[in-house]
Length: 183
Image (cartoon, rainbow, N blue to C red; front, side, top):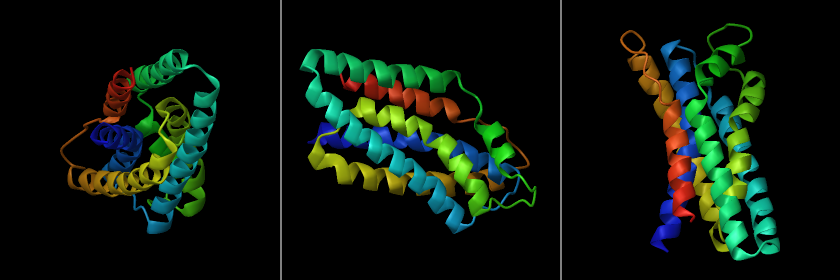
């Protein structure tokens, strides 16, 4: 039980790192994130995760255990490597504020949320969470997603004059760790 809960936290944290990085970029640029936009970003990710978890459960039932474990590992590992090599979080943040009003409107949050939730699709299929852990996984993902956005924006604003730190590599590292936990 502890192992499954740890996997849920790692999965949710890995999926929240991009949201943290994007909101950190917004904070550095002093762009405001209203609650409605934060909820859109988080809910799109959780919706993608829920669809992919259901697909993962369906595929899990079709494959024998060893090929299913290899499939989960491969998806999570490749997604983690891709995230390690991807450095587009800041670019996504800059492109999302279309009208340059230093505020991410709900309409601007929709395409950004869709871009951020792509990782949730692959990771959910690879995670293979048991049905009894479905709701806790979504709840933890929702709470960590909101927390990551708020923390990223807050820290970005505070460090806007002194730092150019990037955290987008952390999500990839966490997904690779999760892949090895699935073996």
